[in-house]
Image (tube, rainbow over all chains, first blue to last red):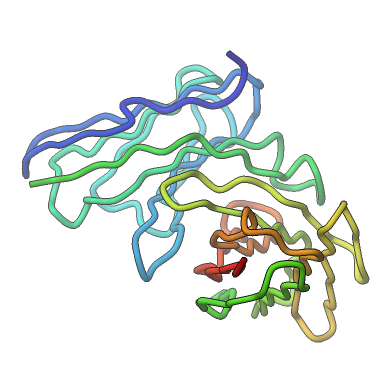
Length: 117
Length: 111
């Protein structure tokens, strides 16, 4: 199916464990993003990628690692999960970030609900 | 620090009326603005974007942008109960460091 998918949709883990959230898009969009959404904070950018093998930090990158070996995939890893990383994680993609209008539109995946005990 | 401010609500509007959602931004370099709708437990979905001063209409939705006053608004005409959701405002300046989401306005359409 075309679009952007995330897996798993729900995850429960324990403090200190490593967790990887997967994101896959079929549009060949150049840009991909990881956000977390928490009550009172809204959507906050964790990491983003402008192309394969190009990644950069967003607003809240601490405790997270990303990679992008293929254009269509952008996994997010929590190296040692903490309770403060309990959140809903959204992956998004867009064609561009520098052309005003439609090509900058971000399309979001369905989200992953992560609970760290 | 770049900020996008939205009234968190809830904003309660009777069915059939016009819902007016507002967003102010601090970064004068912001170029594009997006309105997303997010139902509870779901992901944000695009309603419309605007990057020129003035109004832009799409069906029951109208986005308004005033760069001099640094505000963008979304009007929903003939509001329906299905419009009840949280509406997120996003400003972009070009580049990921120019991405700023507001915290959203919770809209309730009363039947």
